[in-house]
Image (tube, rainbow, N blue to C red; front, top):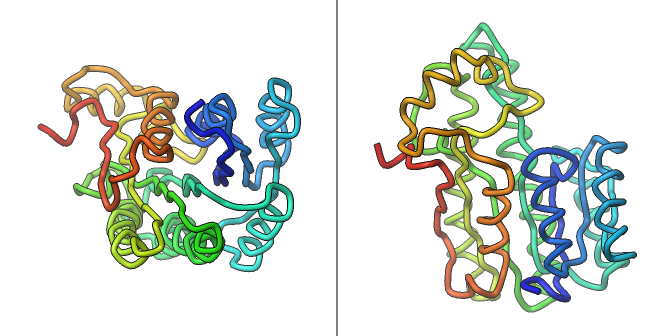
Length: 251
C-alpha cells in the first residue's frame, strides 16, 4: 500500500475529484478525513471507505473560507488519528456560471474559495506537519491557472494562478521542514456542480478540439496524479506542476 499509516485531509472530498482522491487514498492504506460542506455526500464517501477498512475515514464539515473551521478540522484530525501527513486542497468553485464576466461579487466569491481557502488550509496544516516532521501538500490548480480563457470569469484564472504560485512559495519556505508542496492542473474534466458555460455540450465540444488526446479526462486520472505526489515515490519532488490535461497545454 502506497500510503500505509499516512493521515490525509481532502477538502471538497464529498464529490468529483475530491471523492475519487479520498477513495483512492483509502484503498492505499491512508487514514482519510473528508472535509466538505456537503454532509450527506461526504458521509457516503466515508462510509464506503470504512466499509473496506473500518475506522479509517472520518467526515468533518468545513467551509474552506473559515479560518476557525480549518483549525478545528486539523485539531480533530490530530486527536483522532494522531498526526497529519497529507493535505489535498481540492475544494473549489467554477467561474463559468455567469453572464457577466465583470461581476465583482463573483470575483470575491471565487477568489475566497479557490485562493483564500487554499492559503487558510496551508496555514492551518503546516504547523501540524512541522510537529509530525514532514508532510505533503497537493494544491488543485487548473490549466486555467496557466492560460487565459474566454468563457470563464477572470477570477477563476486568477485564483488558479494564485494556487500555482503559492505552491512554489510553500515549497521554498517549508522545504527545510521536509514539507513538500506541488500543484496538479486538471484540464477538461466532467462538469463541476458549480459549472455553467463549461458544462454546455456544444462548448465542451469546441474545447475538446484543443485536447490532443481528443477526450475528456476522468476524475480517477486526477486522483492517480494526486496519489503519486502524496506518496513517498515523489519524495524529491516539490514546487512542481503536474498537468492532467490530455496535452492541452502542449498545444
